[in-house]
Image 1 (spheres, rainbow, N blue to C red):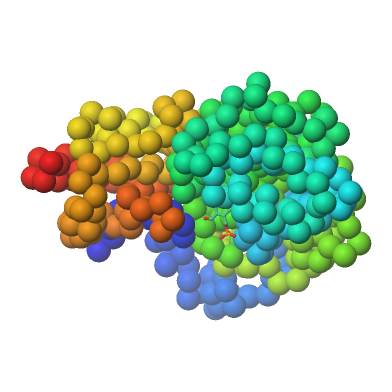
Image 2: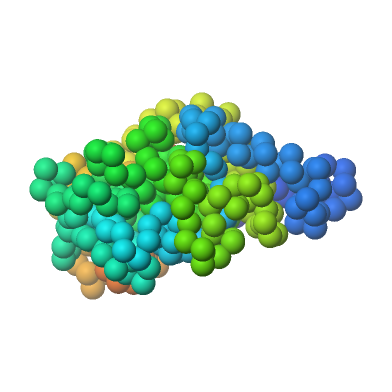
Length: 359
Ligand SMILES: Cc1ncc(COP(=O)(O)O)c(C=O)c1O
């Protein structure tokens, strides 16, 4: 029996996609093999790879001056690949620190750049996004990096930063494809797949072509944007299964009406869950209202001694993986694209009932 899986990642995938994978698995496209067993250089797989890129480009309206790469090493690999490709040791790189993930990204950048400048810092509890008028940016920075959606804190930027001419680099791991996005505002967008895109093992990078041209000589070829772009992301064996499933997810998104339709679904889901939290005297969410995430909703119970009971009873009701990140505790419901409205309604119904019995 399927449960409503609120995990932050790897996360729930659309059921129609899983069913298609199941149907196709033993004998994919009458090849007598599964897609996992076929060469990445075969015509059949190249078609899958190209179609996935085309669908992703269509969903996000990616202009032709951008390369779309399907890489390995996760978003964490990109924490290193970005400074290696976009900056020298002597460059200044700007980072905005709004939570655990931006902090990790800027920590990794310090290994590769002598001048990592924190342009803005939400500090301490990470429950807000600093107003852009208070940021101190470096006019000639090699790039400015930020994390549009902090998966752990549940903080999402309500705006795209304006950087003048400085390339804007964004870790969209937990919110890419959750609503429409103007790609032209960005120099580089990256996202680990295992939340809103597909299985773990794949990392999508969308990068403006001119930013692929100045990688450091020591950049590993698997993370060298220009080399990977020239090789169709196949200078080595790519994660073929993850790529194939991501392609099916893109098709599912297109069938549902693309990112505008998905954004509307996500807005409704998030509003429902935040309303259930705010309308109760029992649950609370610490994030400033203007920057509450549509994807990751952390909340605490008025009686933390009931956390374990809450999780156990939720699990028994088919609502799983609601524990908050180990660094913050409490609860967190991740409600990515593949979480249906019924899942959120089941959760809010359960929360109400739990409060009635224990509040
Ligand atoms: C915003 C964000 N950035 C980076 C990462 C790290 O991704 P990966 O495990 O693919 O390296 C995560 C993973 O949860 C994330 O949520």
